[in-house]
Every structure is written in structure tokens, then in C-alpha cells.
Image (cartoon, rainbow, N blue to C red; front, side):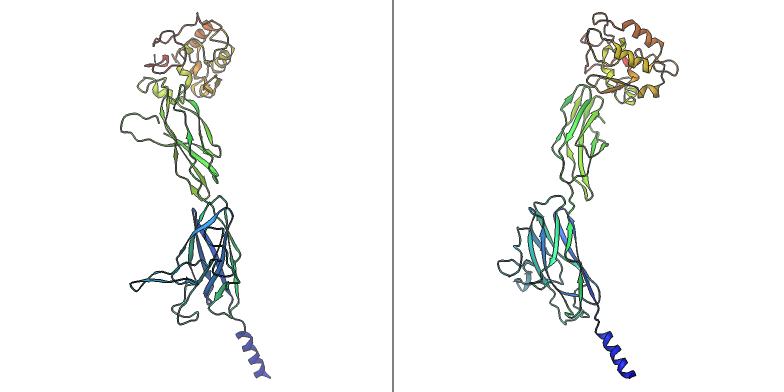
Length: 408
């Protein structure tokens, strides 16, 4: 009785061969998809018959055989001078083999590959590895979120293990979503010139992009300087409202997603009227205040703080409101005060500093109040320009002045 029990126990152990877990996975670099395989020891794969499909209208247009352990079957080997120059193609086209998909230049492809080594068996020194790269294929008409699906083709044999009696488990059907680098967001629109440095830069939406990075370069100076690119925007919008000082400004933008970034799209340069020359005494202060456009108003020194003419008078209630907000305020506080303008967006309360004769801690003081009171609600004929640059009497936004009254 004991002997019989021992025999039964031995049979039970021998009747449970090891389970082979075969996994198929993919990676992609742009439109090139690489198919990888792995299998648990001690079982190995003798042959693959797989169906690969992509979402329409995408299509598989080329295929590349990579793994030296798995040869093409069915296929034709080509020899030149005794050397193998081609192992054929792993494509099993439906024109020649039953139960296969249409093939290249369609959204469905059947591949067949086998490992014809000797001596046979999982322990053979010539057996294929337990993991590797099976093949690569290219996808045309690719779009963001395109899905790849790989299944066993049972009619053509599916996945065959070296030990045909060993049970197997696979991760098939396997679905892989291609995440592509978004295309370059060109063309990019940048105005060729602008009178006050307030304008919009825009670019083309890029399919699959999750954000855009916009950079600009410091107005160029000299003849041998290289542009210094600085990021000025990151987000999902396809436009950006810029506010810059005088000079030549350059822009470039790229699109990004989880898989990486596109190449840069570079727009044309924008030439902005330089209301304060870089050689002027007050240029460093002008830059510090983020190139306030109000410095270009010649009539500012007589109280026209926001530069927006309404009616007959240069200086009106809107200027008074801004002046009251800035009066007896320090530099840091004045910088945060905004005064609405007609064409330049918002400007700092610095424009309420009418005579620029700063004494003490406050930027706007009694001397400025005296000037403002003198010209408040005065008509054009009475409010004269304090800037002596030509053309005489021109009280509009200008370009090319040697300096404006700020540096006087």
C-alpha cells in the first residue's frame, strides 16, 4: 500500500509541467514601433504567428526584422557569393497564405517568425533567449492616440513553445497607444514692427500638444552678440500678449507632451520703436520699470499721465485718478499702480512722476502736483510740449528721439 502511494505521488509531480508566461510589449520613437518579447524559464518560444493592427486611417507601411534568433517563415532567403543577404520578410500576406491580414500599406498585418535551431529543446545552447526585440514597423498617417493591437493568429499557429506539451499564458491581446512628439507649431505670427511694444505673438495649434513654451531674445546690440533666449510663457494658449521696450525682438515656440518636445518654430523679428535710446542716462531705470510705454508721451510732463486723449483737453479725470493713487507713494508702491491707456494696455503709476526731480523716499510729490494743477483741464493750445526734440510741437508717440524728458 505504501509503495502504491509513492508511485501515485511521483505521477502527480510529473504531470504538471512548468507554465510558460509569454509577454509581448511595444515601445515607439515617433512613428517607428518596436515589438519586444519575453518568456519565463524554462520554456522558450519556437515560433510566433501574430496579427498586428493599427487604428484607421493609420497604416503599417514598412517592417524591419531584428532578432537573429527568429528567422522568417514563410519567406525566401537570398544568397550572394555564398552569403545570406536577405531573410525575406516576416509578413504573411493574405494573397499567399490563408487566414492572414491584408498586409503592408493597410491597417492590418500578419507576421510569422520561427527559431529553427539544433539540437532542439529548451536547454539547447542554440535556443533563443528568453527576451529580445522581435521586429520593428513604421506607421504612416499617424495621429495622436493611435492604438496598436497585437493578437495571436491561431489559424497560422499562434505562439508555439519548444515544449509543445507545456501550458502557456500570454498577455495577448495586447494594446499599445502611441504617444508621439507633437509637430512643430508653425507658422508663427509676429508683427514686423510696432510703435509702442504692446502686441500679440501667435502660433499654430499642434496636434497632440499639451503645452507650449514661448521664448524671446534682449534687444540685440552690437554686431557679434548671440541671442539670449528667455522663456516668457508656458501654457496651453496659442497666443501671447507681449509688452516690451524699443529694439528688435525675436521669438520662438515649441510644443510638448508626455513624449517630448517638437523642434522650435521661429517667427520673424519685431522692430519696436525705441522711445529711449540704450545710450541715454536713464536707460537702466527705464528697463527697471519694464520699459513703460508712457515714457514716450512728450505731453506727460504736463500731466497727461495715461496718454489717452478724450475730448478737447489733454489732462482729464482719468489722469487725476491715477495721480491721486500715486501721490506720496514710494517706488515699490508706485510700480504696482495701473493706469489704463488706449493703446498700451496698463502702465505703472511711475507716469505720475511729472518732473522727475525725486527728493526723499516718494516718487510723486508736491512738485508734480503743482504741474498737474497748472495743466488740469487745459485745452491743446495751452498745454505745450516740454520735449524739445523735433518735430516741434509733436505730442504723439514718437520714435527716434535722442532722449525724452525723463533723462533731462
